[in-house]
Length: 171
Image (cartoon, rainbow, N blue to C red; front, side, top):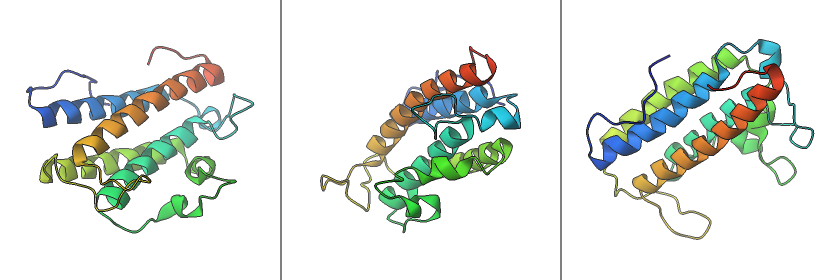
């Protein structure tokens, strides 16, 4: 695991945004360090049966895929997100419990590296190929900010789930 930091090496906008997204990603991975395979699949919150460490990492991976590849680049939807329905809106969380956590984390890291390159290759003002539900085309800056928010929010969930499954806190 790399050393987590939210302090960018330079103060330009792109570096600050990428540093914060990487910090949030690194925090998600840190919250999963050393957990057993069994605990990674446990859903300790009775009202949230999909909220497992595996499910949350799977969700983070597929949320980034959706915003970078589907919305920003305009690619066709693929993977477990194609199975989403009103009754099963987060199939990536449900199916992730069948995938070992180390594999989910490796896929998330590999994908993060691809998206770092994507961000470096596009202007922050570049607009998404697909519109959001309100018809607007967000820019790359918004996508990065949204993913920082999404990842940070789910880091809180990872923190709670981790404490409940094995007592570990403070990652």
